[in-house]
Image 1: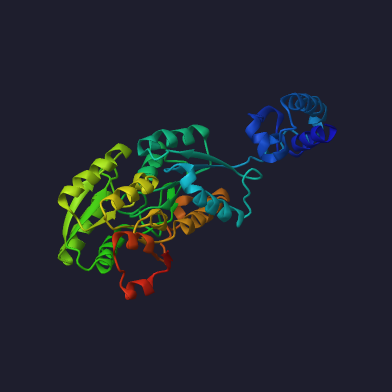
Image 2: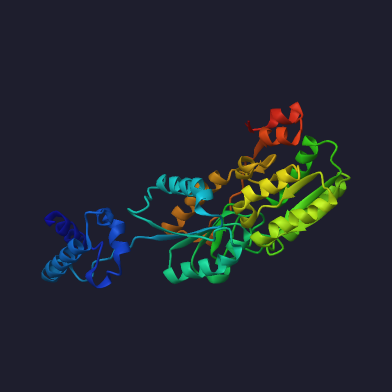
Length: 370
């Protein structure tokens, strides 16, 4: 008990905690992790804190009223899918922070909020981060970034993944974003034609392709235009399917079935990412090979994924957070574009669909799921 009270007093004396500025258990726990342990009961806490206040009053002249308070920065982390589907991304982000000396629970706090696959929750999640007055917000995907931008024009926003940040108006340019938004682009819109090329190579007899998009995602209009242009260039017939909430995904597949497409492109969206297992199950039921951006979907059952590593995006996003916490302005930090793209092919899905993937395509794959 004595050592704990001494530890609390030393935090007050050093300026890490100021008696008139204590605003809750969370800030104490950030700099004194042992307060979160089972043995540190509320009774012990009250007794220790009372002692600190008493000693603090006596020692106040020695500490000095003008001493600067060291604030623990808080990161607001917005997530679309359920946390169980994104633990690897959270861990990648934390690893990125650690590489720059930021340790969660020691010298930085992270407030996590998940939409649980419900894009309509993004505005309230972003508004809550503003109420918490976090130091920086991290978000991925156009709907989430848009919600954060609408919630604040002052708190820095770091994009962990976005298809076309300039086209969407999130930044003025990649080199000089301006405003309060910067981060990592995934060039997803530009990859639409490549997805058609790959799925056509995997299934050479393909003549008709469906595209699943979210009409509530403003960027999907650009994806749809790209898909139409790419399909015409390859003499493929293209048809659209839409879902903006979880309950609309299965009806979208039912509507697709009547058109009998030979393959499916799933445009990246937090909704579809969070429901990738459901999408995989519905596609398998229709014996429909599908392709999308991130390898997490290939793990779930997509035939092919092609795009940048989402884990690497989150590690890179941590670098932006580090710069901002150290004083850089987001508008002065250039948006980063990916330089490496992963081609992942799920051979289990190919076998289930009765597809034989051409050897030339297999040789180009970065990973084969068997």
